[in-house]
Image 1 (spheres, rainbow, N blue to C red):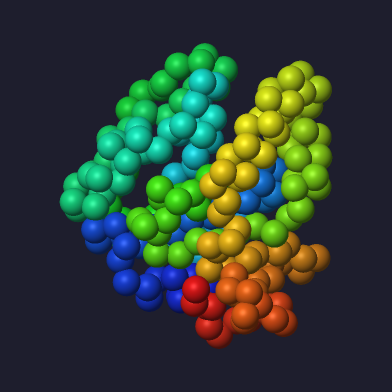
Image 2 (tube, one colour):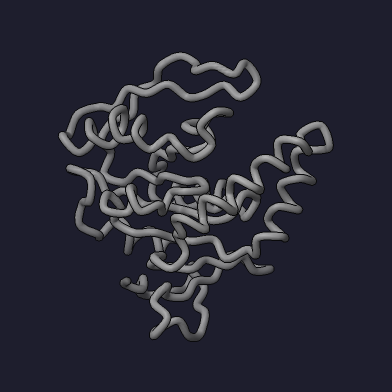
Length: 205
């Protein structure tokens, strides 16, 4: 994944001194795993997971808080102070500090929403189909969270119906048996898949 990381690192900053990289896709599509591997290839870049930003009451209505606590401070070159949500305790946990690093990955459903896109240097979309993604998520979380998944699926459908991310993705990422493959998100140029571990150029939107 190093060639992809080098291309992202060479992008101009999009959020003050920060290059903000969005990784979006359906719940259970493999965003967290991919973002973690990409962060390693970027030399340990920080990852902001939207699961830590959303709440039971605000599955998708969290952008105002993200903007005030994270985006605006980083855009000004200042550390961001924010508190992750505790899904078990149903409350916000201790405050964390996020420094304005050269690269920051924001990962989660809605990372490519229209309000966030102007702050992104690049938007990557995980191409795992919706039903397969949800099935993986349900299997991962077990029957005890089936009621939550019922609610989540309705909320995700409503969100992407009103505010789709995939049509605006710069890169479409697919997981293969040997790693990851990507194609350009631009319909006119989305052609032969290339391996992100062998690619020599990141598609531009």
